[in-house]
Length: 200
Ligand code: FE
Image (cartoon, rainbow, N blue to C red; front, side, top):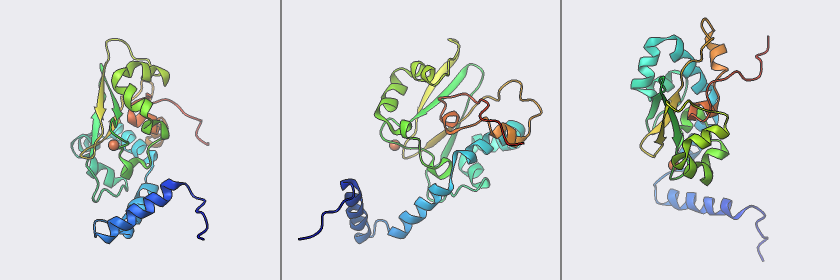
């Protein structure tokens, strides 16, 4: 009698799916491994550096808004075979919130794996129905005259937010500015804010 497989059933299902796709020549195990490695190299720090650069370099800002994928590749993200990266520009009076209502679409090649809450059914439903309440739960309370625009990430387009540069950061270095940005900021649930103090 075969030994029972102690792993979750989902793992065995995934292996059978990969084997079936490979057998039909749809995707190879090598391609999947390469994509996984690219996601593991990516991180919110790449997005944070892109935002910080855009705040201090108008030419990079223009590129970021016009062609997010190219801007990301300049920061080491491997965008080959990836859906394009779109960048949503917050303005005074306009705040963006990113969600994937269908599943968990996220710019993985740039920001890495999505946070667990981003994939939760609660976030996906509530971000659309009641974005202001979701934002408030993250401590993001926007004045009533600020419009909240909820944008759906899809298989065709992956979005990240270019937030407003906070007041009081004039003259800051790029690395210092980048330290204000987290995965939460890049999706729009939080505004840029100081994190733990940088080592001196
Ligand atoms: Fe999705």
